[in-house]
Image 1 (cartoon, rainbow over the protein chains, first blue to last red):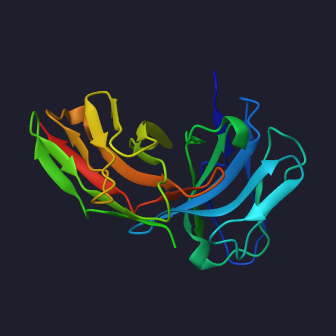
Image 2 (image 1 turned 90 degrees about the vertical axis):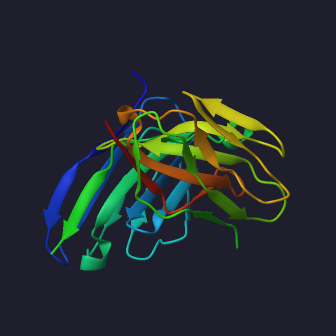
Length: 115
Length: 111
């Protein structure tokens, strides 16, 4: 089954404790992206990757890091989480630019609470 | 910069009522437009899209028409069901693979 898998789905942590949210897709997609969803603000892009070893900042990258060492994986790293990073996070993937139709495939989301 | 504005919710309807969720956009050129739906506890999934002016996207009884003159892409359904209860996001393709999303509109359908 084609899917984007995120882990953990739920996490409560404390300020300053490094954490990683993993994302994996099995559709051989070139493009992957992270979004955060906050009430009244919709989805805002954090980082994206056009292909392996190619990453770039989205609209709200501060406080986050990513890496793309393999095509299928795109982890989101919070080196020193703060309460304003409490949010619902989504990983998404799609075909590469040449074939892109506008459809993003989303994971089920990771709800992060930073105390 | 490019942006998408949706009507605020929540929108509460009775089953079989007519649905309209308004969406307007600001963008340079003529972007592709999309509606995504998020069911409770799930990620977003594409509902429909339109790639040029006057195109009509449709899926699962939902429709939206790309109106260049009013920069709008309103979502409509003639008869909603309880199972349509979800959050609906309007989005535009800015450039490359990037999508810009609206804030989302919660739809609640009562039986």
